[in-house]
Image (cartoon, rainbow over all chains, first blue to last red; front, side, top):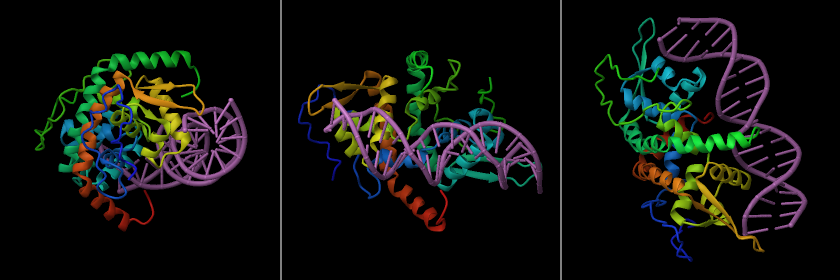
Length: 144
Length: 144
DNA sequence: CGGAATCCGGGTGGATACTG
DNA sequence: CAGTATCCACCCGGATTCCG
């Protein structure tokens, strides 16, 4: 179907190669990346996943402090979706004062590992990125 | 600052290790992943980046067909942001009928490579994911 | 072909207050 | 501490129309 990008009429001066697999196997998904995005799309999900991966079992409060600018509402909502999608596991100790923590399922753990390169990329290109940001924020007072 | 998750009071039965770097170096960013997310947050950006990476120079129409369910408005908007952030380069051949194509900058190319594991993850866990989706879509007619 | 412009509904997501 | 509930502004994003 429409995904056969395998006919480079022009040799394309630029290497078209860094992607080995994008095979549409199941209907409803266009490619592997699409599958992944359906699961981690959400303003805070990657960060949540990542923090829990780093800390192991993580309490609600810790998580909130880690992500910092997230609101309770959002944090809970995203956590519930992650739980529904089988990526995190919620444990309620039924104590008072309440104690709850979140951990990753095996599936979640594997996804968190796939997230590592993104984190590394950000660390490596942080300077470059903030330079670009500064530029466009300067010349573009309103907008974006 | 609040990011010192380096005190696991409990030894945490689960391996807290898959993440080597999340060093807050610049103010405004909490960690590398945060940097990356500021740049690829946007419903279609990862897919766009990925398709352009695969195809090399890609024409507007190709891109639209590849992402498929995206509207013109969204596609253009996301492309402009990617361009402003120095990830893609737009080339207008000033012909008639119009011809325009998009390619990746070196920065964009490096980011696309960091995206590869996500694509692989999706491919590998596609069955698992769609099973989970089916389950919650069945028990949850409305919502989400 | 490759957009730009406009309209507009619904969902996202922040702030605040409250609860067990 | 770990949420829940409600209100509400904003902007995301789809549909449509027009342009060079």
